[in-house]
Amino acid sequence: MIPESLKQYIEQTILPQYDAFDGGHQRDHAQTVIGESLKLAREHGADEQMAYTIAAYHDLGLRYDRDTHHIHSGKILLADERLREWFTEEQLLVMRDAVEDHRASSKNPPRTIYGAIVAEADRQIDPETVIRRTMAYSKKLLPEASFETLYQRSYEHLLEKYAEGGYMRLWLNSERNVLGLKNLRAIIRDEARLRQLCREWYDKNK
Image 1 (spheres, rainbow, N blue to C red):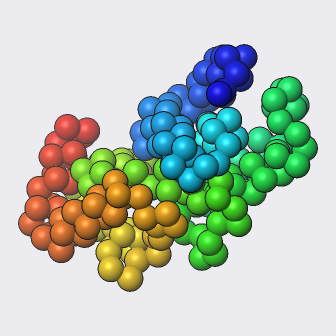
Image 2: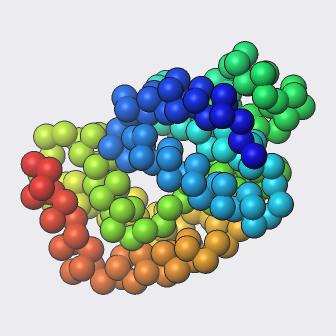
């Protein structure tokens, strides 16, 4: 059971911070990661209160930069004195480690079940959502670029991260992500379909 006071603090103070981030990391993203983390925590017998809070904090480091945001996010969580109302110092250290371990490009497996939970929940491998987020980030990096430039950058990123042999790993192999990854890889292989989806996003977001 998650205390109502913790829920209020997260919803009123933590989640609104996501409103300042890019289109792929807004409040709805954090809420989705929270929901999936709670589901996975129940499935794996983990502490739901810890999983809930880890998910809420996992991307806050984006206020600093993208490349090291997972490290900054862990520091933000550990430095938040309000969290000591609900968690022990030992729990907070585990939670910090979990936040640090969520990043998809990490070459090492998560150190605890909590890191595996937030990493798996963060994947959110809905093919069209992944493609939209990839195009959105490409446009953030290259706001004046043509469709072809944005498409090529996005295509290369999708290949590097999600295609067979890509760096993205599923640590818990949730049914949702396994199926999503299979469908996403099929789209990546069908370049005409991928181009069509990217063009649809581009035309709506010129």
